[in-house]
Each structure stands twice: as C-alpha cells, then as structure tokens.
Length: 312
Length: 312
Image 1: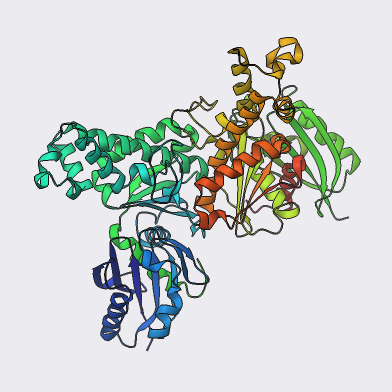
Image 2: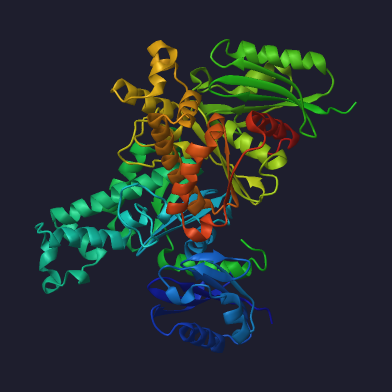
C-alpha cells in the first residue's frame, strides 16, 4: 500500500499545530495545543494519535519551528520564543521514538512554501512573505524556489535609535510592528495618561489588552488606537520597502493575526512602502494577504517530507 | 576556429570599462573611458577596437550597467547616475550594429558573480557583495547561484529620519555610507566651522575634497575625518547586519574605492554589525574585501556570455 500522508508539525511561540496532510496538500486531521507546556510529550502524543488513524500510510514527519534552524543537522540553533527548543536536535528527538524520516525548517520559511504550493503565492514566481504575529518572520521565494536562508526580516534594523528588541538589538522591525510592539506602544501611552477607550477594558488590567482589542477600538474611532496602528504600519511599510528594493519580488504576502487589521495597519504600511521604495520596483509588486492563514506552516512542513530528502 | 573570447563592458557612474576576456576569465585587453561623454559612440568605438584584435574569435558581448535592469528584455529600466541610459534597450542598441549576441545585467550583480567564479567568493556557497563607491550596490549569491533580484541594498532605509537620497527616499544606506555621503558629511561640517586639516586642501575649494582625502586626513589624526568615517562605518554596519540576518551568508564581500579605508571605516562597520546581528548568524559570517577589485564587473559581464543564453 502506498504511503499517502505525512505528519506536519508547526511549533510556534503560542501554539503547536499538528496535522495529517495528503500528497494533494489536503489537511485531514488537525490538532492544536499551547506551546508553553508539556514540551516534547505533547509532540510525541500528537504523533501517536495521528499514527493511530493511519498506521500504514504515513511516510514521514515535517516540522516547522519558530527559530533559526540548521536544516541539515536538524538542530534548533536558537528560538527566542521557545526556550526549551534551544540547541535541541529535533530530527533525532523525534525519529528515535517514531522511526520515521523527519525534516525540519523555520516556520516562516515553511509558511512561505505552503503559500507557494497551494496558497496566495501559487501564481507568483517570486515573493516575500511576512508572518506578523507575536514576532515577525519571513520566507522568500525566488524563481519558484524557497531560498535556503534565515530570512529573519523581523530582525532588520529599521530605526537605529528605536525600541529595544527581544534579540538584544535596538530598532528591529519586530520591536516596532509586531503584535507585541503594538500592545506595548498602546499600554505605555495609557499608563502615561493618554485618554483611550482601551483603558476601560479588563477593569484596568492593561496587561490583558491584545492587538485585536486595539484594532477594534481603532475602528470605533479611538485616537490612541488609531495612532498606534498607524505608527506600527509605517514601520512595517519601511520593512516592506526594504525587501522590495532588495528582492524586486512580484508580490509581498502578509500573514498572521495582524492582517485582520488590514484597513488601518496594512494600509499605512502600503502608503509608507510606496513612499520609500524605488518606484520602478514598487509598481511591479502586489501587496496581498495570505490565503492559507494558519495552515500555511502546516502545508509547508508537509512539503518538506514530500520533497523527500532534498533539502529545500 | 573556436571562438574563445568575449567582449565585456562595465558601464559605471564614473567610467566605462571594456575588456576582452578569455574563457579562463583572463583579461586580455582593457580600456577605460569616462562615462559622462560620448555616450554610445564610446561603446561602439571600443567594441570595434576589440574586434580588430581578434576578428574571428569573439562569441558575444556582456554588458554590466549601474542601474535597474530588465535582463530578459535587455532594457535599462532606471539608472540614476547614467541618465542617458534610462529606458534604453542595450541589447538592440549594440547587437544591431555589431551582429553579436548581447547579454546585460546590473553591474553589482555582475561583480558579485565575477567574485564568485574567480575571486574572493570562490570558496563560499553564499555571500552578499557590497559595492562601495559613488553609490552603494549589491549582488547576492546563494547556493553558488547569483540571485536574479534587484539587490538594491544601497537603497535600504537604515534611518527613517536620515539623509536625503538621490532616489528621493530619506535615510537610504547610500545616503549615509557611500563616498558621496562621506564627502558631503565632512564638507558640510567644515562649512559650519568645524576645525579640520581638510579645510587647507585645494585652497578652500571644498567641492574638490574626495573620500580618499578624508581617509588620508583621518590617518593623520584629523578628528573631523575620523568622525566622518566612523559615522559612515556605523551606517554601513547597520546595513551589513540587516543582510546577515536576512541572508545568513557565509561571507560579506566588500569592494569599491572605500574598501581602501578598511581600518577606520570598515572596522567600525564590523563592530556595529556585530552589535546588531543575531549572534548565531554573525559568528558564521566572514567579512572580507573583494580580490578582483575593479575587474569583478568585467569578469561577471563576460560570464553572462559564457553562460550562453541562460539568463543568470
């Protein structure tokens, strides 16, 4: 019997997603667990459950991880948001117990490849993908191939005197335009006495405010919330203009929870990118949302296995 | 008789270089003319001279141009420093008169490929090349292949409130770390009354001061000159850290006249890059000077032809 499925695992800063994926990139089963607890037990448990459903049809395991990856060795070189993975060799950790070939890559790279093979990137030979969430990641496709590079576009310095980033640097894109940065900007202004309807939420427990709350308040006309998203959008736009000038891509694809805030956050980003990019390149670049959303990483992780032992 | 040579032309902002190059990447003849005058006549004339030497052995013409290029169409989409080339189709312009196949690419891309096939990039699978001159260009090799992208790293914004750039943007790397930017920084400070031995040069005709003069004065201990190179070096270092975090290259290769100022300008750049890059990536990246110097563009342009009709 031919083995038609792979187990795809996407380990992000917030959640671990696991799915069974067919060769046609269809998702059959899907599980989600918080990343913070359980560590490997959760991963092993989920693999076993998937295995129970299709005991004879699983050909391998593809893992996408939020962090800097050594694809060939299978090691997580550094994952700032998933400390327990730092230095871990995921290939040996997983394959020793489950006796299946294991392939790993960075999660934003995998997501970009997922969008390429069955999402918004399908019709573009070259694009840059931004994953906008707790942090900011990237994946880059040129000539229909995912570039085997770190693509840490969230850690591009966009302001030499900007905000402190979790990586230790000053002024990273991630420290200005991630969900974390947006929440930080708004709550610090509230604490400094700026008027906002956000201050009425959660009985003043500001630490509970989310980027989504800020977006909702902005839509209601709250000016702190609007300014927060505008400022973050300008920073994102600067980052987008840099990748347009460097990669001259056919498209920039945006994904992650913050893409929901398109008509303030992203519109300001596009305006700023158009101001700063070389016009000849900007005019050829479409800036669009992803179509797979959270599933992009899963589809990309699955393709690691389908592409076989060829590193991508 | 086999055709063993190609004509390679490198059209930069200051000079047009033309050479006869062998399949072994040896340069046989070499001419240099100022870019500003004569336009196409100079190019046609140089091609004819080369042709006289080896009338039966020239298989094609490779052209590298400082600007944004449409490789397939053969058009110079935009060249800010060589206005008369804007919108010109170089393939038809040259091939109509000389009846030889013509290939074109961006000059920094060609230089990167030149360093890859016979220079400082020979032993690296992946590297980012910075051409540091009047402007700042880039070329990127990943998995031994030149990426077919604009690679306009000189127009990456490194400071949202920085200097005005010739491209119309504010805060481009080129507006902070090119030879032009270095001269501008020093002379504007002299005009504002800052003490410097530079002010004694050229009988006060400050517009004659060059980046090389500033480097020499810095070596003599002139503090304005030292500060100028340190500031420019910090900006370059920020740009280098961005490409390290994005491309995770094995090497960053620096070329152009300013590389002569290694021990102030480049040393400060390396210090800043080490502060700002992700340590796991920085520690794996060698920062080195080019070995071909001005010949890199010529060698790269020649390889356009040797690689035949395959666009690179």
